[in-house]
Image (cartoon, rainbow, N blue to C red; front, side, top):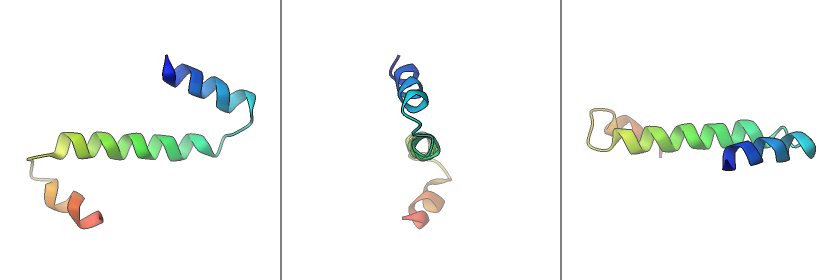
Length: 48
């Protein structure tokens, strides 16, 4: 729903540069959520 509206907004207003930024932020958020308490945590914290 929100994602569909976001893509429609980007398509209508020619804001294609926003799409990769949002995708990277979403992917990073998913990685951080799933890596809490896992073996990947030290590598995630090293990025920041």
